[in-house]
Length: 86
Image (tube, rainbow, N blue to C red; front, top):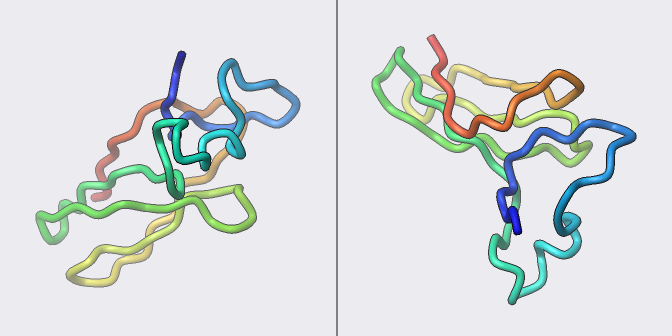
């Protein structure tokens, strides 16, 4: 069973595995907020971007220079977990 928490949600489609509510149960494997990793080339570092409260994007910033980053969630997305910000 697929326990990844970073698959982009597409409105109107039923997920193949457990729901987000199931993932928060202690025995369900991945616990916590969904996130993606971003490598910031500007400062040669990386950070996690967490899904916002509205559930429509992953948001965060470079831990060194503060450059803001937003990755939208929607149709035509990807199941990739690691990204690079230039």
